Each structure stands twice: as C-alpha cells, then as structure tokens.
Length: 234
Image 1 (tube, rainbow, N blue to C red):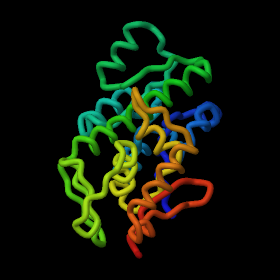
Image 2: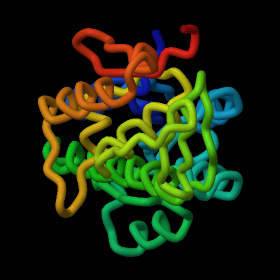
Image 3: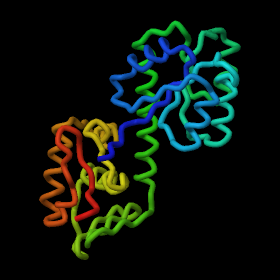
Image 4: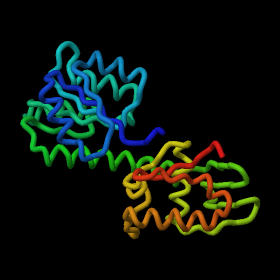
C-alpha cells in the first residue's frame, strides 16, 4: 500500500556527509534518496517528483547552484534547501537569488538542519491545504457528493452536516486518490490557529465521520499503525 510520506532527495558528493544529512532528518518520517552529482539528480527528477531537495553547492560537474536554477526554471514550486560550506553573505545571496528556498552552512548544527527541513515540509503541507480549501471541484463516489467550492457534502442527495475539521479531513482523504495519509500528515493538514489536533483527535474525527456517512464509511480504511485512506475498490 502506497504511503504519502514526504519524498526528499539529498544531492551530496561526499557519501559520509550525505549519510549524516539523512540521519539528521530521519525524524521527519520521510522517504529519503541520495545521489552524488547534479547530473544524477537531473535524471531522477525526469522520472519522479520530490517534496524537498537538499543540494550541496560544490558538486563534481554541474554545480549545485546551477542545478537549483535549472530546477526552479522548470518548476517554481519545487522546494530546495542548499547545504554548503560557502557561508559568506555574497554566496548566500547568490544561492537565494538562484531560487533556493533556504540555506544552511557547513558545518551545520543537526538541530538547525532538522528544523529547517521540517519548516519547509510544513510549508509544502500548507500549500496542499490551500489547494484543497480553495478548490472548486466536485467529487462523487458511490452516492457521496463532495463539493469543495460550496463546502457541501451529500449522501444519496441527503445533506451530511460535518464540522469544519471533519470536512477538511474527508476532503484531504478524497484528494489523496487512494493513497494513505498518516496521522501526522492529517494533523498538519487539519490544525490551524484555532484548532489543536493530536493523533487521538484524528481518530475521533474519523469515528464521527463514519457514523455520519453510514454504509459509505466502509470506503474509509484504517491502515493499522499508519493512518487512513479512501478505498476505491469497494
């Protein structure tokens, strides 16, 4: 079963440093890939998308800063964090102007790097949340009609009254297209300024959703120890 963990690509030509970076950000619960040149990274990016790229500046062949510029020219939404020994102000400005979303200097404090990565991943989640909340799509599945624009849900043409958190939860599950959303991902997506969410809160919202959705609730599948998804095969 496919899980929607964040996808992170590390581009670092020194294997020991690449492994240190991977160990530092392991708490982000992401799928981490490592490559050792910009050219290898370009090949990977042709076939796969990543939530975040961590790129060294000094690479063999094509430099990291040129890679960042090339990646951003094709996809302005791609998040990139530069990690480099070039710590002077001029280099930092060059990196940011090339399109880097953040910049960490070597040698780095592991706590700082982990915090920067978490911040960028939260930004990615917030962007996904904005896309859902600003959507005008209408989703229909086996008698359920979910109208993002009107903020309305009906089941066999009967209105279903959901709380704002329940509406967002169901909306994100539908948008995930059958992929698993972990409890942590759902917490990040649902909570806001006036909403405090925990793993237990997510389970409570799912329980309430299932009661309101009656037989249709069979589509909401629990992935034990991970999270939830909408099962399209029922």
